[in-house]
Length: 380
Ligand code: GLA
Image (cartoon, rainbow, N blue to C red):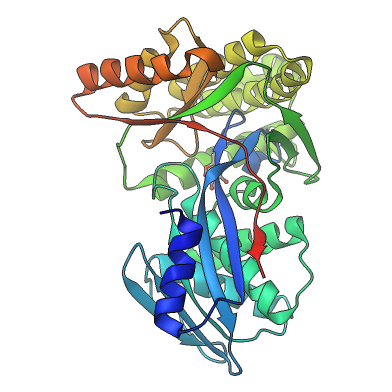
């Protein structure tokens, strides 16, 4: 059953009426531009056909009641008084209520059913999908005008300050502003976006290694610190402001690890802008080459891949139908992404599955993804 039917069906069962609204907010896959967002740089993600859905109706009071079909858990709280109790998925919902209140919005209670098919902890932004679906629900119920970039910034703040994950803006932004059939070049400093289509005759394939790693937060925060240190060394606001030339001239004064972290960000920013140009020309070969170079840089300079991601990317790159492949998301586990000739996609999925299982001993989950629109009211 489709998720839309699942949440509306469950809503009917629990509340005995039709839902007033059905909301959808997507996960994302990032084609290129990794760890550049918190350096004020460029990213090139697309919203995907895996999403979080909420069927809901308003309440007359200030109570929130959300049943998660995936977790088989109910979250209940009052908008007047609620606390962070470190409850996993529930904190994303509460965090959005908190940030909207802090932003001066008048909220109204609602009750609903939530379900999603964005794999958790796989680098496809399941948390941003919950955040934007929740924000869209509050906005629908309380009649708050929907301004996608502004909502993305609020959702990021909820994740930073309520959940305690110091993420950049990419995931919330693409879940809010995604466009069907397009990836978006996002300037994470100005939040300007430019939509770019996939090269003709290609598809995006997501390759889940099934490896999940804890401690991502501490490694992530360490990378952020190293990037800030490097920006300070160059005397700029963020590494976005350091050109390759400047890096080559002055970078030698940096300690080795910090220098390599900075080199990843500076070269990755350049690759991301070039990748968008390549897409506009329909140049699949060049986009693929840039994706491969991105993976090398994330593996060797930024050091955020793991063995499973490297094995998966090696398997994917070995296929003649593959233009390029790289890890996607924060790293340390989760998914890789590949650009593949559309007419060979089925064969690619089969061969890479066999290859990855042979080298890693684990059966992967590999599928073709479509670019979809961002958070929206689907019914109601
Ligand atoms: C996570 C964060 C994003 C971004 C990526 C790495 O997904 O939430 O803000 O930093 O990692 O590119």
